[in-house]
Image (cartoon, rainbow, N blue to C red; front, side, top):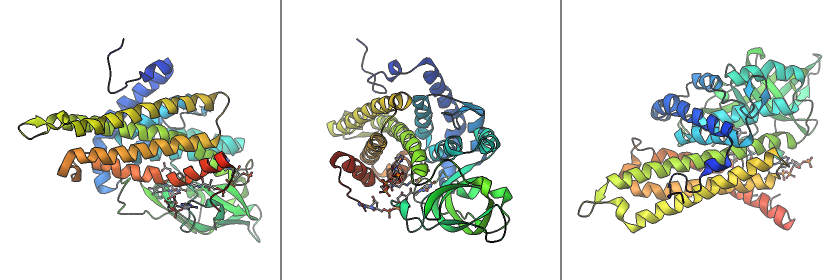
Length: 394
Ligand code: TGC
Ligand code: FAD
């Protein structure tokens, strides 16, 4: 019988292929060597170093789930394991990566023309180009179907669309070279590629500063005032909300893995702290039953959530998986990680309020992960609708 290993009680590696183990290990080395040393400064100053995207590209971490175009073409589980390693360092770095991989490269691969794929995918894979995904608007977050952003054919110039509207809370937008924007053309949602270098006027992407979380990533708006783009920059192969939601299925799956990594990191740092810190007659905090219970519950959920992520990844790559299953693991992983990290913060006492200890940063970040890509209650409603057949949101 294997002895109990608190870091991996159910021996995750027995469910993984050699390739998946290898990609996770090399992602871990990269994250420890290249991302970890930058994160505290990045979080304090809200500076996202754009070189990170190139470095991730060199490591094959961008669009890792895509075959061809310079991408490594790993399995869904391999893609999730990378997200887990990156999010052990910071949810913001995982955000930057998953937007590029699932929300920008995936729609180009899935819905784009061959010309769009050839033009954008290899450079996005290398991190030479940075992408952003604009769905949320100032007045429409949980309900993107009501979006106000429009596209229309230019009244006089042939072969040109004109876009108007505003997107907000957009990861990477201030530094993005390619912006995937969802807008209504004749009342129907369509996807458009905005290439910053080709746009002469009307586009601005101001940063949203002074965030209370996810400060190591860069977030902004996309403001479009008569932005002109060639008609070839629309995705030809998708109409309606299926377009953005297909991207979200992939990104939400990656988040489920990622936040589990953040929770594992929270457990690791809390365990160390509890063993070192003494109170009452020199006893370590780890010797107190109430502290042990917090750790026991967190380790249990992290372990079980990982197994669910593996199973969903395997289904994704075989017979496919219903979006509601992805809602289930996105909601469960994010709620678990957020709630446990908030409880584990208590173990640090007043020190939790110092950014020298990562637990506060981890926990604040996890609030955002529970909110973006469908807030947890929205995912409960998606599940409730599937269970009862009755729509509870209108
Ligand atoms: P509903 O009637 O349910 O569906 C409309 C059409 O869309 C199709 N569809 C899906 N297709 C594929 N995958 C899915 N998951 C799909 N969900 C829906 C559906 O079949 C239908 O197609 P058709 O052909 O019949 O028209 O639409 P609704 O308006 O009632 O939707 C409600 C709801 C709650 C499900 C949806 O609006 C929702 O999920 N809201 C949450 C919004 C959200 O997740 N926003 C994310 C913004 S991006 C982001 O946060 C990136 S952060 C990235 C980072 O930094 O890491
Ligand atoms: P609202 O929709 O106003 O919801 C507020 C609250 O009301 C939530 O708790 C919600 O669950 C609840 N609620 C809403 N409707 C109902 C209902 N019918 N029944 C019950 N409860 C309901 N978006 C992008 O498009 N691209 C990005 O790259 C991106 N990155 C982000 C990065 C960060 C740091 C953040 C904070 C957000 C990002 N978002 C992005 C936006 C994110 O997806 C939205 O914030 C999220 O979808 C929620 O929308 P909202 O903020 O407008 O909240």
